[in-house]
Length: 273
Ligand code: 76R
Image (cartoon, rainbow, N blue to C red):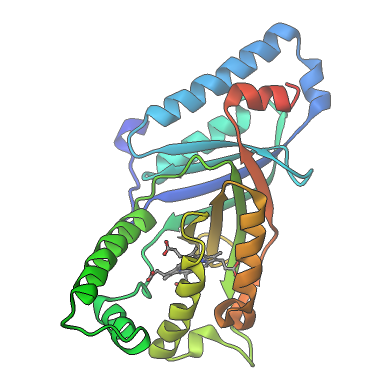
């Protein structure tokens, strides 16, 4: 079978790969000027080629701390294609130039806790005292329907924003003796997630989040990718979330990575390649 015939497109969602590398400058300096230029052209063409593929998105990141130098975030429907691109990216600057220091595989997903129309109607009526037969109510419901339709679509089939600050970390929900998310009844989890969502909505227009599921795919249960226009918003949302019971009592986090979205030519300059 040739590559073309292979396809591993999931029943739902797209694959998401976060790939972070260290640059081996000693190795890079062993290359001649021409080889270095050829290596950079190679990576540039690969990025262009991937970005031209249908439903495939690739972000290039300059990582901010020495935890990693260069990062890629890839969205691809087909696992074969994601796998192929990952191998190509790793080798793109020449053998041994990019050393993987962190990676994460996850799938975009719809959540089982997305607010329903009934729930939202109840919130309007009971918490905001808006009468169900009023015009205000009808308007609010219309706006809700629009928002949630867009939200569902964006969770499973996202368009990655070009916002410069990108924060990635993984997250799991506790399964301990004191706090076990998975042993809670569904209604209780749903209710807790309502609180989470309302904290999240305070950051509308300031933080875009992409929550991707990774149970069975990688070490933690979710990948959390946050996009912002400045680092303040990242710090603010993560801090605020810490007080929300879902995070305060049930969440465990992995290492945090911060990258800046940069065009490849600027990235090469930044990295002194
Ligand atoms: O409006 C809705 O009904 C959707 C609500 C919603 C769900 C279901 C939502 C809203 N999230 C959901 C699910 Mn979220 N989210 C995180 C983090 O650092 C931390 O403490 C937590 C990391 C952030 C910062 C964040 C932001 N969310 C999830 C899930 C899956 C849970 C599960 O299935 O058990 C996780 C792991 C998770 C984590 N969340 C929002 C945000 C923001 C900003 C919003 C509002 C988005 C919007 O309305 O546009």
